[in-house]
Image 1 (cartoon, rainbow, N blue to C red):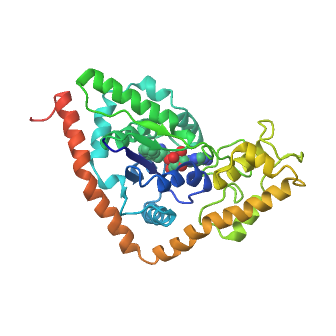
Image 2: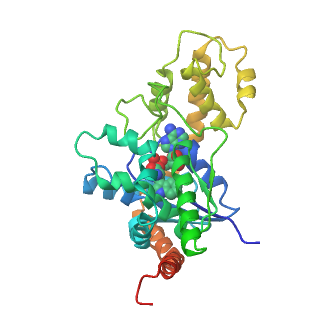
Image 3: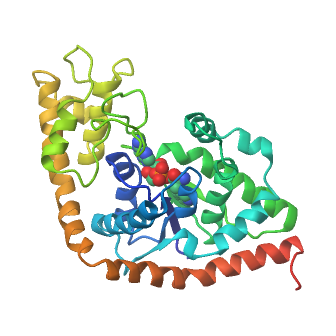
Length: 331
Ligand code: TYM
């Protein structure tokens, strides 16, 4: 039986947080034995909003180091930088001649991100989902482990693949999103009504995976909650619901088990204190391994380069098949 192909990506824009970790990275790490795995630092996606070149260059290496420290194993998975495999840009063009403006206009992430851009909105921000579709389709991906915010982009990817296959013949495999039961949408700790994000201002918005125990404590203890005391999942109380979601994502408990565990707690303080301990212990190995790996950037660069080399033939084959099907090229 053909093995599953897992593909996923992350923007190398610094400050990886527990939303990224529980929504995506943890699944990447735990699923490594079950499939072919390809993980991508999507530096071309990062360019859809203004970036400082020197900072971006540094963050690509830092993000790669964090992913290896989190447990991505180069013996089992490929970890590479998007712009190192030029087929990503190439296939994006062909997909832009298949997808419609209407499809892209419906993307909620574009609406949100374009509103937060003070200056002009770049064309790349609008066509971003086409590049993401190219990432996925190039490697005949069967599963895409992501947080909930990426689901719509994967549905678009499926639509594009279907439309292409129906028009030009079977070239693309239709991917499935793999969204975790717990941690698919972690909210901001300073404001549980907005999604935890890398770019949100405020030092108590997110727990970052490299935060010190002291920083984790400060952020979690200052998390916004309401004036109640019951530790229950309740949409009317997003603060405590978010803390329970983080607890479940970190421990593997179900929401019912988490509620039962905290049934005799004296208030939100007890939940927060326990969560601090759990997050500190969950992230400790990652932080320690990251410190070791950071001392050896040439090994990390080597992994990125060798991964890109290994997967380029797969990407090339897909683009050539798409070109043949569309009737372009000298033949
Ligand atoms: P990015 O860099 O914003 O996020 C990386 C991963 O983290 C997940 N995530 C979250 N999960 C739970 N709660 C949160 N608050 C939270 N914030 C982020 C995201 O869902 C994602 O899985 N467009 C993608 C990158 C990408 C990609 C791809 C992903 C480019 N090409 C191909 C999969 C396949 C993005 O910007 O992720």
